[in-house]
Image (cartoon, rainbow, N blue to C red; front, side, top):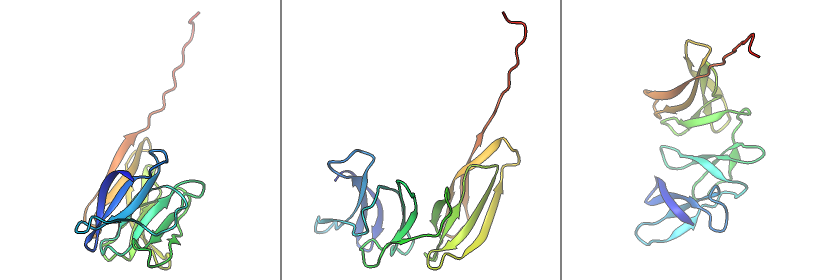
Length: 173
């Protein structure tokens, strides 16, 4: 592993993300490092693809990550490999924006429109409840890149203008 970054804390260990040696820089691996013993161990969840989006639950017992590649599905796993990795029941194109404070649900939605519907989805059972809908107020202003606190009391998102122009010219020879 090289280019390691601490992305969270699991118990008394650090959760690290680094480039997998011998592969391209786009391939990431995740590890637990013990700062006392200096021992580093690769996480035990299945290695079926690059996991570039990874979020640790507030109680530090589970990870949610996106498997890139063909299916690009979202997976929940224990950092220590103590339980099997389980795919979440998300729709194509949906993103996970974070965990809820109780570590039982995630915020999920599909970005890229003038209206942005976010649901809370339980990770055990996949029951969904609407949480909040954001409106840009204009059809040419798109909303994306949501960040939300676990308790849902604060959020931020990006607005981008999508302009299309039609230019007609006549008599130019």
